[in-house]
Image (cartoon, rainbow, N blue to C red; front, side, top):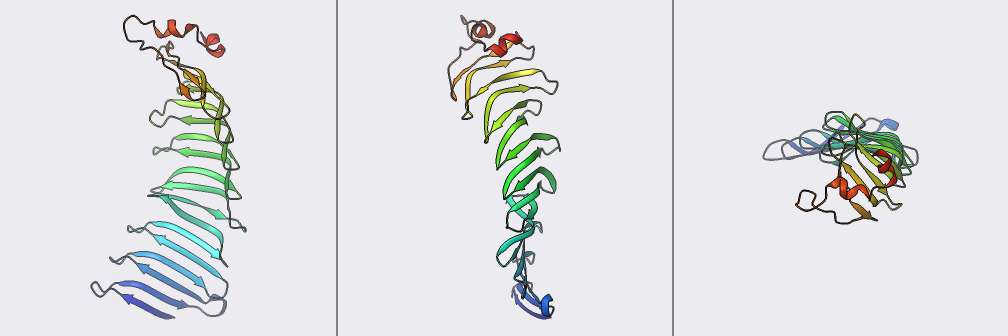
Length: 250
């Protein structure tokens, strides 16, 4: 083994260290750099004959935030990469250098999402979890875009569940919002560009109509203040505006 090191004169701890290990096909160079407090920041392993390089990066608290492997410049094998603070994606690259198969996203060690990739695009089943481990999104991607039937829990209200379809990443057609018992909370339609269109109906806790805003390709029209004096009730105002699917419910 041959070793070289740069030392921090103030602390006596290494700032950079390089070691040459092995012989023949096993010959490799291991290069490490350190934070000023002595914690490992980066480790790079170069196979001197096979064109293989494995790179690791670490956060200041020791967490692995990146693992990447290349052979003659092409990404291969397992990878780990921090997408934003505390969130790590883990999976594999295929022999073309594309993400392929199962990719798992974790936050502080807890699984937050599972998806599948084909040719570096999400394709197949996808599921996302909240901090309590509950499923908050479930559906399918096709060529990197949401497609088909999806079930999505509202960000701030887990018991509000949106159900509907995506085409090429856009919400289309009829969508419903229900609670965990299946009780309808609201519903309406999206146009083929993913914008609300037509009358949406919002229900109160007793199943009565609370509001019925009309949308014109994403632009919401005005509705009365139903709590003000000399205005009709929401049920009265909405009665003649209801779409067919809501009329059948009432």
